[in-house]
Amino acid sequence: MNRLAGPQIGVAIGFALLLACVLVSTLGFHLIERWSILDSFYMTVITISTVGFREVNPLSPEGRLFASIVILAGLGTAFFTTTMLGRVILEGEFRGTWGRRRMKGRLSNLRDHSVVCGYGRTGRIVTELLQEDGYPFCVIENDKDKEDELRESGYLFIIGDATEESVLREANVEAALGVMALLPSDADNLYLTMTAKHISPGTNVVARAFDSDAEMRLKRGGADNIVSMHKIAAHRVIQGALHPAVEEFVDLVTDRQQLSLFVEEVKLCPGSDLAGNAIKDAGVRTRYGVIIVTIKKASGEMIFNPDANTVLVEGDTIVAIGEKAKLARFLKGCKPQR
Image 1 (cartoon, one colour):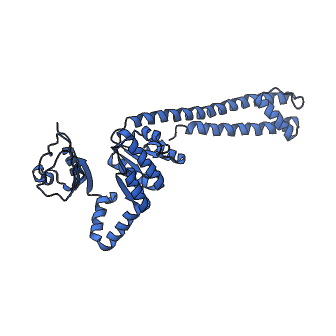
Image 2 (tube, one colour):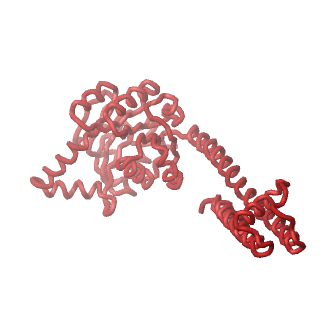
Image 3 (spheres, one colour):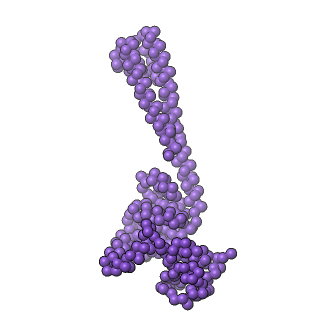
């Protein structure tokens, strides 16, 4: 629950009590002194506020006693209300300042993370999947209306323009594994790609494209991978219509609701037991129970469906498919062994 809920409720109660005090006091002066409603309201205001103006008319003994009660009740209610209001303002500012500093500190400590630029429909799904798989990430979103939603999600986030260099640096893009350009226009995604590559040329940039012309521009701008949502949809439609078995397999690999197979990629690090061994000798199938689908060499050459005699070399990027637990064991085997 929001920590400010208590003071906020107190402010509402305080204003309600203050209004009740004004109404009761106005009615009391009207009945006791037989004044008009306007005169009674005026007397109530100057009594509660203690401004020291003259009374509307001389007060009777009963009126003076009632006025004393009004002063005590009014001052007490006003003090309570202003105290609660001050707490809301001060605590809100403190939480905002402290929260921003804490967020900035956590962002500066991020390493090997993803920077998700754009928290729209696609961005939400991406962050959910990253969260499920336990990958570190932060979100950059320019719409301030989404700040509360992002804060409640618990994600690391920045409210700002992802095309600005200062914002990307705040997201520690220099230490990021990748940047996901999911902004609402091709022009923004292109500018973001160029800015990210200028800051950190080695960072992998995946950009969404809305039309075919933008794909070429994004490629020239430095995007490592370009995702065309329309092409993906078209391919899935064709696969479903002409190759339903293939489509069923793709769903098996990608559907998180009934997921049994995962696809992962990993770079073969120096010091790994797998390096320098052929696939059959490394025990990829027998020891780890996974299938190597593709090997990307350091030169950029892609080897699809490598045979059992293919030698695994340090620096190779391996794409493998298998069950989650087995893949995790294989990924660990690709790292240096102590």
